[in-house]
Length: 322
Image (spheres, rainbow, N blue to C red):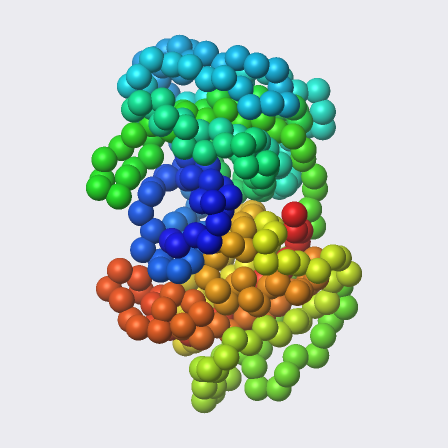
C-alpha cells in the first residue's frame, strides 16, 4: 500500500500493530478497501496467553500520567505467542460497549529492539475504530466493559513481509467513545437510470443487481442513494462506514455487514475511487460507487490480487467522519 503522508504512515503502522492478524505485506497497489487484509468470515475465538506471555507483559514498565505519551521500557527481545493485554489504569468515563466508535491515542514499539514504530501523540492524530471490528480483534475483549480514560498495554505477534514474526508492544489510551448509527439515514435520492439496482433488507444491508448488458464506465460513478444531513466529508478525514463490494458480475467479495460491525478508515489509505467518491458526500448518506479498474486495484490484471483489472461496485453507508 502506498501512503500519501507521514501521518497516514503512522496511522497504518499503529493499526497494523493492533490487528488480530497484522501483516506488513500489502499487495493491493495504490490503496485498499477498509478490509483488504481482513477476511469476511467470522473471527475465531482468540487463544489464551501462556504464563510466559503474561510474565513478558508484566515485565513492561509504563511511566507517566494519563493524557500524555508514556515512557515505556522493557528488556529486549520481548516476545509473546498470542495477543496478550493488561489494564494499566482504569478509566472513569462512559462505559465501552461493542458497536461504539472508540477514539484512542496509542504508541507502538518493536519487541525485538524496543524501537518506536509510531505514536499518535507525536503526530497529534488520535486513531478511531469500532469496538467489535474484527480488524481490531485484540482490543475487543480487554476494552469491552472498561471506561473512557482506560490505559491498556497490548503485545501482539505480527508477521513481516519475509514471513518472520515479531512482537509489537502498544500502549492504548481511550480518550472518547460515541455511539454511531447502524445504517444511513436521510432523504432517498432517485438514481440515474441504467445503474446497478440496490435493494436493502430490513436491517439496511444492501444487495445489488447488475443490469443485463451493463458496460463498465470509463469514469468513476458516485451516485447518492440516501442524502444524509451531516457535515460534508473531506479527503483527509477518517470515515466510519458500513459497506459491501461486488465485482461487475455481481459476485460479492467483501462486506462489513457480514462481519457484524462497521469499519473506520482514513480516506488517505484507500483506493482512489473511495477517496474521490466519498469526499464531498455528507455524513448519513448512502452512496453507490462504480469504480473503474484504474481507480481501484489497477487497470492490469495481476496474479497477486484477483481484483486487479476489474471494475468494482460498492454500496457505502457513511455513518460518521472525524
